[in-house]
Length: 128
Image (cartoon, rainbow, N blue to C red):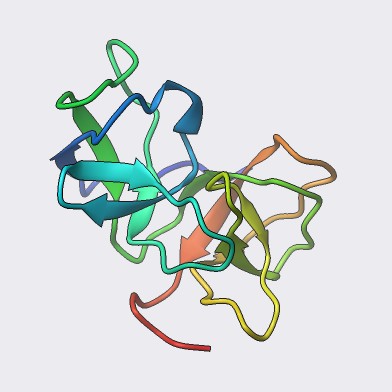
């Protein structure tokens, strides 16, 4: 399994709410800070990191991976290596369909929901 590239640190942003259960899921910037994606196929601004001293709640600092380098994401279903991924309503990565915005590409396969895999985020704001 690949490792996260730590040469360039993630963006440090404020959490919009309790992100305890949203680590390694797709996230988005909101007016109140970083929140987990909550709409199937929506545009993701990055991936919520998991290197915290304590679980982040509203206003706490959160690691947010926003650049185009390999990082980790939790899947909501089995995915194939090389699959284009989009967030589901829980922020988990699932295989994208034609109407979804692609947020990342799987660099390894996952056999079931809950697995954390290495992905390569795609250029932001691309439409399908």
